[in-house]
Amino acid sequence: MAAGYQKSYSLRAPLRIDLQSRASKQDPYSFFAGLREAGPVVPLKLPFVGKVWATTTYEATAAMLKDNALFVQEGRHAGKSGVAGLSWWMPHAIKVLSNNMLLKDEPDHRRLRKLVDQAFQRRLVRDMRAEIEGLADRILDDIDGVDEIDLVGSYARRFPLEVICWLLGLPEENRGKFEEWAGHMTSALRGFAAIRVVFTMPGVVNYVREQIEECRRNPREGLISELVRAEQDGDKLSEDELLSMVFLLLFAGFETTTHLIADSVIALEQNPAQKAFLFADPATRMERAVEELGRFMTPVQSTKPRYVARDCEFFGQKLQRGENIVGLLAAANSDPAAFDGPDTLKLDRLPNPHLVFGTGIHFCLGMQLARVEAQSALSRLYGRYPDLELAAPDDLPWIERFGLRGVFALPVRLNAGSRRKAA
Image 1 (cartoon, rainbow, N blue to C red):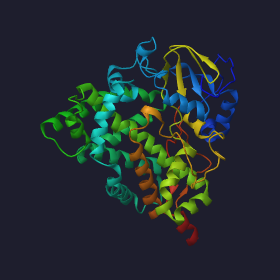
Image 2: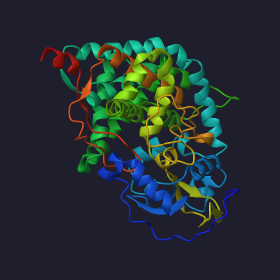
Image 3: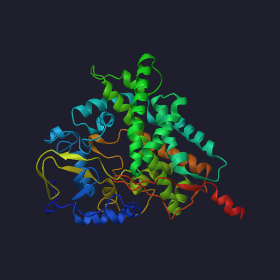
Image 4: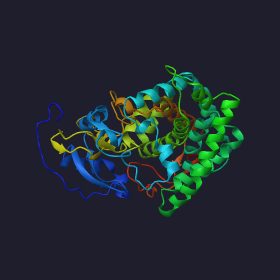
């Protein structure tokens, strides 16, 4: 049991709570406050996964994330087979691509992380800010002159996808393919459209394999070539490890950054005083503001499931070996025990020890890239369209999916202020 937590309680049946509901996305603060009242570790039932334990407080969530000996990714370390959260019926291609470092325990995780860290270190993210801002400007040029757009499809999704394609060194003429594939993956969140992803996946995998082989024959600028070359203590990535790593970098990061950008725009438009504060001095306030926007909205609301490695008592709750557990990042980031007024957006909040990017050995590899992307996306967008406003603020199409807070689309008027002045 965690030090300092004395209360023991027995709660075994899953709580009847819908973590995918529209209501939970519209007002997550009340929703997660209710969960915390049930206890710091509670049982829930998740789609496809079944019963899991979930941490609801900042202290319990941080403790779970940091204890990689007690809470493991691989079933073999908890008397199970497979990886937590992956079903036996998953297509082989998806299982291969899911076999990445995010789902590995030590020492395999450390080995893979060192190899990819080496590749990232050759391209320091902060030194890439000018190129990243240039990509944002190029996308905004394409929508210049249009009065109303879907910010998700036209900017928030396209921008991080362009950044990661450039970072990986993918040929510019092929990047349209990834916009199409990205659209398929996003649409898979809507019922039977998931079938399309299953049929699309072999094409994605084959394309990535072709790019890896091309980089072996003719090395070029970008992370794919650097990963092919990367060595640590004489070790290299295997073919499947390289494939899953590229796929992870390509797809895992772009969706979360898409929602970080779109969610940030929603939060700023719903809090006009804070928006005015930020853009009165964006050069000095943007970095801290993005940290708070991430905490306040928490686009990634939960960790992936992990296994309990041994019978234990954790924050007063008895857990059994082989059971699944998730950390509710959104509940942790809205915990009043860790944040003063957590349901209030305070863009100058300091300190701000949020768990948006996780913590422990599995903290987000693309953390610095996501930060710079969000800072650049908001700076360039509002620098060009300071009067931007939501076209339908009372009808946001929240994605009803566990672990994510984002919208399918975000209609915005780019020059709303100018229109009001003309009227």
